[in-house]
Image (cartoon, rainbow, N blue to C red; front, side):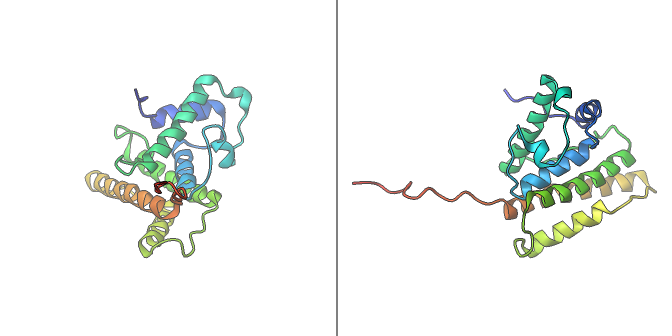
Amino acid sequence: MNSPAITHAELGMVLNELEFGVAASDLHGSLTGFLCGGGIASPRNWLQRLEIDTDTGAVTQARLELLNRLFKDCRSQLDDPTQVFEPLLPGEDEPLDERADALVQWCRGFLGGLGLSGANVEGALSEDGAEILRDLGTIAASRFEYDDAEEDETALAEVLEFIRVGVMLLHAELTPVPAPTVGADRNLH
């Protein structure tokens, strides 16, 4: 049986208690960027790979399980193209400005995590992939203004859909495909 998805509020509370100094969306974006770039990590060491200073004394078993689940859920969403990848953001019941600000934080985290992965994006990306990466940079540097709630809601949904699709494309282009095992398909007579 699969565990329920971790909510933004749940992760935010745990990060606040642990005093990691990183917001929930930023952390999820960093993890996603790191994994998209082919960064190698495990549930045990991913926080260190993202250069997050953790006080291991404050990490209880329940908190550790939540952080491990976050890693596994993110990895699973990225590795299974039939799943719908979702950036971890506040729920739709939260104010629009909070959700938009969290999306900006997520994009900043993604770019930072991608950098920490060591991915060589120069020449490794298609024209579309390079454009997506530039657009993520533009979003990460944005500050949204709100005029019309309905239009703003629609715009945020469109940006979110762009990010979901873009992340899956970047993951496909940057994550090395495992090489087939030599001789695995050969029949010995």
